[in-house]
Length: 442
Image 1 (tube, rainbow, N blue to C red):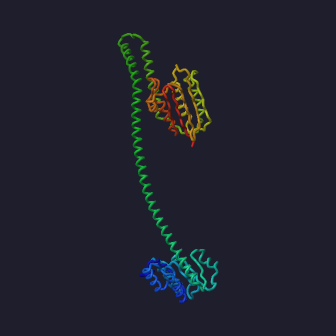
Image 2: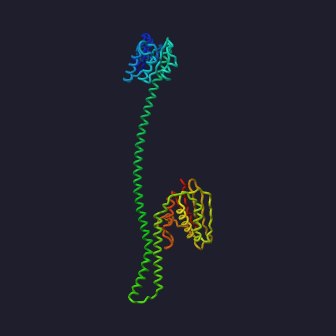
């Protein structure tokens, strides 16, 4: 049984041109083989290792080189074979070859981790000169000859321990780098999957948007056909009556009543005028105010819209202005004026003539990075089943001939086109509040 096989072996290289120095290092750093064998045997028999030897608690593997070139070759071979030296004790004077300082510099070129102890009996180099030649390093110590055995052993223990810790840290750093690389590859793979999923989602959303556009186009076409069919049929009936009267006149029959013909002409013109307004609203709905945004003073546009809607509101409606200081918004004066005027007219229509105290409230306030405009009335309100549809094209609760159902759709398109939002709160018999949220200029 060999005790040394259970303990780590730490390689030390002694570079000195004096053979007796090598013998001294062997005696100091390696325990006698007989003592180690007796200690191992006694440990196996009695379960304890006696403390009678001054030898180190674990062995060193000590190699020798008589010149710097030979020591350099040994270090080179140790690196190639993977059995590197932890510490090198290097004599400063080794004629006729390289001195210890040059040998140390060459050793670090082969193995940058080896710890070096320069051994000298003379003041060949000052510490500043040594630092200038080798640089400021923590891998170098100076040992004066004649050296003390305990001092040599302490240096060997401390420096090999330092070397081993450095190797362990390097291994840990390598493992950590590998773990980071593995994690990075996982994240890159996850990122690639996420990017693919986002691209797939974008394609699906594009297809969905296309389908929704087709669906909206279908609703628009159906609504347009429905809206136009009424006045168009009205025009056709009146023109047919006029044609029959003219054919009778051409056949020699006298006209029964010219007033009926004039009434039929007026009705036909009213029908064509109705169709013209429908087409204009559809064109406006399709454009939805494509003008570029500019900073707009909301209060000034509101005052202009109130002035334009004054005739619709009349003197019977009490107008309440609840204006607070707000920043300019990102929109267009024309688009906002169209929206405000439409909402004020709708509020006037929601106030029946029999209402005892009709009022309309117009308010502005700042809310973070947005400006909020509210147009509120205490009119008839909107039924809950209609509330979710009021922004749909051609949806209206007004009697036939009083609206195309495109006004609120146009308002919604204008506001959202500038990055804003429009919502509505309403209760039947209590009134309606339209709330517009507009962004500040970028």
